[in-house]
Amino acid sequence: MCPEMDTPFSQRRLFAEETEMELDIEIEDDFVTRPRALYHLTDGEIGTACREAEHMLAQYGIDRDATAAALGISPITLKAYRRGVATVSHRRMPAATLDRIRDLAVEAYWRAAAAAFRVEIGGEDHAHLTPIYTAHDNAGLVRDRHPHPHPLRTREVADKIGGHVQVTWAIHPSVSVPLLDAEAALRSRWRVGVWQIGTAFEDLEDANAVLCEIADCDRYSLWSFSTEYRPWMQQVTTSQVERLEAAVADIERGDVIQPFESNLRKAMADLEDF
Image (cartoon, rainbow, N blue to C red):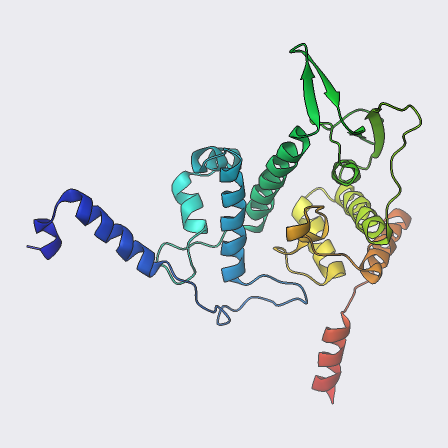
C-alpha cells in the first residue's frame, strides 16, 4: 500500500497539490527550434502571457470556465496552456487563441477603468465626469458597444475597423477628440495599415504572415504592436509603419508586396557570404 493512503483525505489532497506544484516549473526553452524573428516569444513567455491574461480576467470576475467558453475550448485545455514548459501536461497555446484571451483581458480592464467616470442619475441615465468617445466604422456606424472616456482606447477600436473617433458626450460643446502624440500616431497608423492589409486577404492568417514579415516579429508578438494597454504594448517604429504603408500601396496598385529583410538578417547573411 502506498504510504499516503494511510493519511486523511485532506492530507492526501495537499500532497497531490504539492507534487503538482513541484512539477509545474519553468525552464529555459532555447532548445525549442522555432524561427526567431527580431521580436519573438519563447514557449515559456507564451505560457506566462496566458497566465497573466487569465489572472487579469479573474481580477474582474471572469473565472476559468467563462474564459474557456469565450475561447471555445475546455477549461482543462486552458489549464494545459498555462502550465510550465517542463510539465508533462503543457501545451503551447495557438497564437490566435493567445490574441483572443489578451483581447478579453484588455476589454475587461478598460470596462473597469471607465466605471469610475460614470455616475447614475435617477437609476436610468448616466452622467459622465469626462468627455466620452465612441468608435465608428468606415461607414460612420457606431461599432463600439462600450463608449469610453479614454480617447486612446476608443482610437484603438476605431483603427481596427478602419473608422474614426467622435465625441459622444461632453459638458462643453467645444470639446473635440484630442490630438495624438508622435508615438500614439505611429500606433494608430500601424493599426489602420493592419486593417487595410487584412481586407486584402481572404484568410486572416495569410495577412498576419505578411505583417510578421514587415514587423520582423513572430506570430505570437504581432498582437503587442496594436494594443494601447501599456504593460503588454510593443511600440511600433517609424520604419515598420513606413514598410506597412508601402505594402498597402503595393496591394492597391496590384503589385507584389516587396520582401523585407531586417538589418540583423542582412548582416547575418553578409557574414555567411563572407
